[in-house]
Amino acid sequence: MAFHKHGNFRLFPNVRIQVFVQFILIFLLILAIILFSSNSFYVSMIESSKMFEMRNAGQALQNIDFSGVDALDKISETEVKHDVLVEIYSKDGESGEYINTVYSKCVHGVLYGDNKNSKIDEEFKPIINYSSSDFELFQEYDDSTFAGTSQNPISGKSFFVLVTPSTDGKYIFITAVEYSLIEGIAKSISLAAIIITTVIFIAVSIAVYFYITRITKPINDIVYGTKIMAEEKDKKIRIPVRSGIMRTETENAIVNINALYESLMLTQERLLEKSEFLADQLNEKDIEQKSRAKFIADTSHELKTPISIIQGYAEGIKFILDDKEAAIEYCDTIIDECGRMTDLVVNMMSLSNIQHTDELEFSSFPINAFIDERMKLHSKIFEKNEIEAVNNIKDEIYVYADISKLQFVINNLISNAVSYIGGEKKRIEIRIEDIGMCYRIYVFNTGAPLPQDSLQKLWDSFYRQDAARLRSEGHFGLGLSIVKAVQDAHSQQCGVDNAEGGIEFWFDVAKGSAPEEEKE
Image: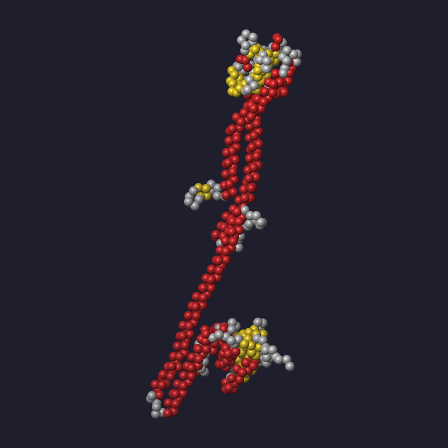
């Protein structure tokens, strides 16, 4: 059982059962009408059939010569042939009425009284007894015949009677059928009709049930499918539909529902992607804002120290003007700190330009010659710190990058290697490896390994593993940040690993193509 949305009671929530029950009710109503009206209908039908037989029997009696020897046999043959009862009366000479019995079927025999020729067995009890019965007329015909009902006063039986006058006016022929026989036949036919109708009803109900099931299956599929669609239990669900050129309205509706649901899922996926993208954008913006705030704080901190030193030494000069050597020392300190501030500002501007403003100008160039040139620029530093620097890239290998920006990468990684170098025999090695889509260049320096938790922090701005020592050497922790910014601009990777005997930084660069040499 179920209820409508507004509270109306619904007995059968299944549309298949609803249609089937409605069909059964309509069929039962039609069946009830047929059964209630069938008895009178069948009686009328049998009366019409018997009327036809009685008319034929009356016509046959017209041709019998009642004075003949075979008259009785012919009358009996007529009764048997047309399945009727016959009585014949002749006209009385005095009264002029048909009251003289010529032939009558009796309970225990037959009376045949024409010309006093009779055959009587036992007591005379006529079956129809028309002359003594109460006759009720219900129809007259153009050929002078008339029909009605009569009841035998002796037996009480009722008969359906047709009265046919003879052509010469001497006789009337009574052809009759017992009403109980008509009603019995009508009841038999009615019972047979009920049985047949019931069998047909059951067979038709079964056929209709399966037919309704087949018709309503798409509706049930729609109900089941749309329920799952509404609950979003399965985004890939589609309501099954019959394939073919011709489709019903229901199947067209299923196709439209599937298309609508597919469009809805696609729109939902797009909205989800956009929401995720917006969330990522907001997250990146939040991270960027935090990075900027941290960068500004770190920059302020880095600038604060040299400014404080400059301010202190500048104030101290006022009190040592008479001491020329001390004044010169103070001025040298101020000059050094100003140089560090200049380097810091230059590095900050370089990092900002790489991250936000500069556009890359790509070109192909040999990486071995490029690194040789960078190492020559650092040769004085190598000699000063007694470092053996080796470029193991001997072959002419072409890479594709912005050569001016890649200088920041090599210069900062070499400077970083010098800063972190250690061991009895100081050594810096540069090598290359083909990793498929690009080349990976490694910068190795001897020294103590770095803690694992600090390897990723090295790429952060102003991060220094040994802050005091590196600051004294003029390092601000921006070099590796610049390296990462350049690699990000190139859409390439960079990293650092503890290697055997030291530390190894690496960066990727796209493969380039060598210019075509002129053929001699």
